[in-house]
Amino acid sequence: MKRGYTHVYTGDGKGKTTAALGLVVRACGANMKVYIGQFMKCGPYCEIKSLKKLFRNVTVEQYGRKCFIRGKPSEKDIEVALAGLRKLSTAIAGGKYDLIIADEANTAIAAGLIAEKDILNLILTKPVNVELVLTGRSVTKDIVRFADLVTEMKEIKHYYNKGVKARRGIEM
Image 1 (tube, rainbow, N blue to C red):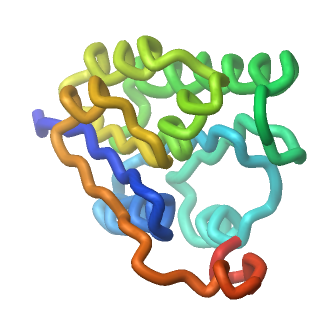
Image 2: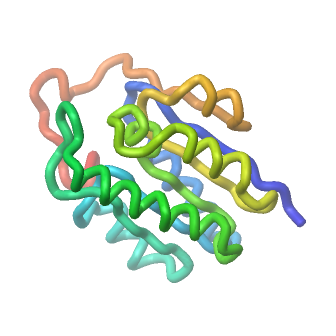
């Protein structure tokens, strides 16, 4: 039985979800089954469209609403995130998937949508063969402590600061 590890991609730089999706492509090349749960996202992002077209063994679910959360999340935002957390937990425990991506899980904790203890529980109770990836800014010290690999994306320069909006096919 292969050993699965917990990865974290965090930081204020671009590329956290992109790095996780690179692992998805690699895993699919090895005939692994993949589950992607996206907190705080809802909509037809280009990367999700591509994955659905290219790979039969990838399941994607989004745990967000169409609105962007600024400030305190609404009860509905919390409800959607908690329902997503339950789906993510079921996917991890179910034994069907080799690679699980919890996209924006760190950000969801920082936003008050889900509790850090619930993500720590996923890390500590995941089956030994499951590879788990957590993305998002503002990772907590305890998640870093229990993860096996932590990569911080650091922004040095970004054209967003010059007023360039997110572009279809590049940022979304």
